[in-house]
Amino acid sequence: MPATVAQPPPAVALNGRYQGEIQAEDRFLRFGPFRFACGEELPEVVLAYQTYGELNADRSNAILICHALSGNQHAAGRMPDRPTSRPWWDDCIGPGKAFDTNRFFVICSNVLGSCSGSSGPAEINPATGRHWALDFPIVTIADMVEAQVRLIDHLEIEKLLSVAGGSMGGMQVLQWASHHPDRLVSAMPIATTARHSPMQIAFDAVGREAITRDPYWHGGDYYDRADKPDAGLAVARMVGHITYLSEQSMHEKQFGDRLNRDTDSGRTGRDFLKPEFQVESYLLYNGQKFPERFDANAYLYVTKAMDDFDLTQATGRLADAFRQAVDVKFLVLSFTSDWLYPSHQSRDLVRALNALGITVTYVDIDSVWGHDAFLLEPDRMTRILTNYLNGLAAGQA
Amino acid sequence: MHNVQARPDLTAIAELVTEGSRVLDLGCGTGDLLAYLIEAKSVRGTGIELHEEAVMDCVGKGLTVVQGNLNDGLEDYPDQSVDYVILSQTLHYLNRPVRVLQEMMRVGRQVVVSLPNWGHWRARLDLVLKGRMPEAPILPEPWHGARRWQAITIADFLEFCLIERIQVVDSVFLAGPRAVKNPATAKWRATTGVFVLQAPHTR
Image 1 (tube, one colour):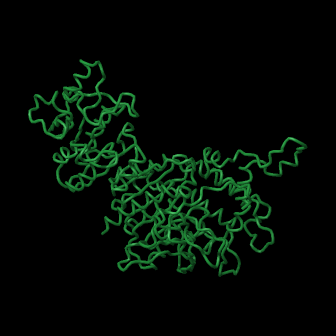
Image 2 (spheres, helix red, strand yellow):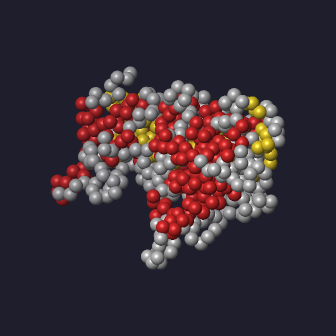
Image 3 (cartoon, one colour):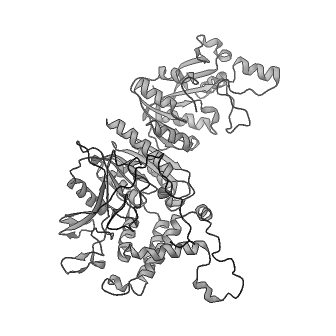
């Protein structure tokens, strides 16, 4: 990382209980046929997943972690065969951490439609021997969850102790609670919504437009070409990163600072091509890095899945989505400076659950880090998740 | 913040609450009352609390608490959905106390309110003899403290219930930790009043 790029606050080890990184490895589950919500059926799909910790004898300590838009199955630990892969929730998963792998069996799978080993547009269609590209069925949050249900079946887990996730991960959590309430004790939707708002859809639409307008996108058939729509994907990621920050966090990161103090002499229009402010550098860097680990078509598929998500669709009332979930315990978390998934969306969810008499704990965590807070507030998250899981485990005993 | 020792009304409230009932505690703070009711009376209890730190403490005690503002009402809670809605030492902080009380009686079959009595003889003397605005007889806070409060006396509250046709089903008066047995003297002897209320339309 260039020195000019502002860093998020470092991950903090928990009270000295941090016992070193766990080792992570990919596993793959193939199953089929799989029918998508759009009606299309594939004879076989693949889920890439990882697990941390041990499943206990009565198979009651399993927690499913659901990742967000750009995440994948590598939630925690280090991967010896992919040393550059950064675990996206390592602050919260591991020995002595909130999702304590000494106590819990933690599972995380790559969502359908994504690009880290699970079936999606970047994988090979066995029928043609070529990349699926846009021939891959449209994926919904419901499809992602149905595939996870098959994984949990495969692992012979009847009931998950919890399903947890932030942002798009939180949508999967809500889908689980709504459609498979008998398979979970608790649900932890974090910084999320039961229905994508027009504003959220708008940002995704700009991201998709940046990709599909990239001349190298070629209608999605770029896999066999030397040039990929990396520029479009980078711009999509830059838009995304803006929405994950907040005005305050941009100040905290000193994003308004100039990279070069000596800016007065001899500047021309050519200088527009160089980043001049910290914020430009941050966005460019994150944009440029993104295509190394994410596929442009997958970005289209996964953002569309988020935009399509609407648990109020059936009746227009959010509470109706959770009528079967009366025995599920909810922990709902939001962050005060998150303007992409604002707290009122979480409060709407809490209201719907209250209306049904469902056990729900809700905390609106005071944070400056915007939507990214769910990854950047490890101390607060650790405290509340640990306490909540302790209460839950006590209730189960 | 508070513990059972400092809050004799907690035990008084616990005595008024039926074993195993469903309880909603408004302004539950760090959850002392809820934890006590769960322990002593096996209630199924949840709370609402404004402050994040206090909610975090509640979660640490294994309690179910929603962070929220009571002044926004209880609109999402169904009618008569819990046995008791409790407002313990919180009424005097509310911006819209009448609305909150109405909402409590809509949501709860019974309502329990405990309040510090500014009609206590020492408070009366403070004002008359020293010309000083009396602080609450328990858990005193100065007028310029962090929270705004409205002084209420037991007499004020009972008159309010009469005008609003709110039925006072039961009441307990405390002077410090001790019960004030004679209700006639409670208005000046009690530091705390605990009332079980019922809406006019019920029963």
